[in-house]
Length: 340
Image (cartoon, rainbow, N blue to C red; front, side, top):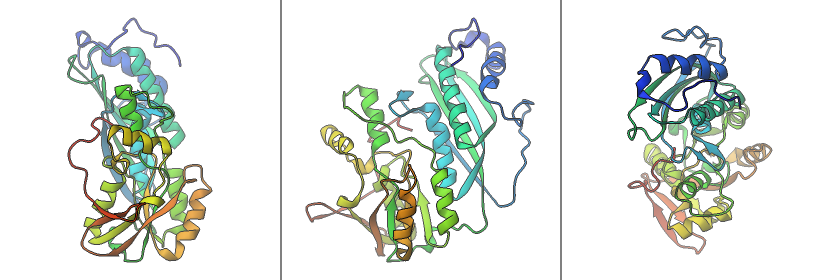
């Protein structure tokens, strides 16, 4: 990483909000790593070419603590999280805005590392950073960095991901192991000493978009189970579609260190956040072909059928490994604050 060439070592309000510091950040730091043509004029709005199709627009804010954790950081999380929200909507990611809230006293070296990771993740995802904003707040009021992103993508007219297409008999697929991100972040924050944990933070569009190209008629619904984890995502789906969902505990992929770490900390891995997985509802006639397709991709090697859709009224049940059945609900309270 190139060392920031400035006498300023930390973010300071003394330089003024919108004055010398902002100018230096834009000219000496942001433009060094954010290279898109639409950004270079530094106008108040980016002028963007747009292909045919339906517009997809998403916005999100990222307040993770710590800023850096095994498998990712707030910069990669902001980009990949926004790309994934577009992808599970069937959209090809095109453009990204980046808004930064910086706390007074933040080392410039830390900011530069975050900016480098944002730029790298955006480049790898093929999404262009086209506009942004920076504000500084007093020390003690910002937890170093908050990031807000808005993503724009385009959805082909042939793609229809709608819970109203879901029918009893459809199958639920999870693209891989659950709980990795949430447990990795809290373990890093509290220094619990749990070994081998790593966030699954990744951009999923390279898996999802080809999936939809090949199975647009049989893949009915997609969602990335972030805050609230798999259980909350399934409950929200069941309520929206007014169906019941039956999940198999033995079929849900989860790494042993996540399962064990969650047990030690008294957490339920079904409610832990994920940042590199998605759930799909698929017509049962295509389930084997979809599984085979997913498992050929590095991000889908652990894909598994985890449940099925039944007639009902919005309830989710888990068949446990011991043969019992328990009902799953929405996440209540803040099991893991500041994870995304």
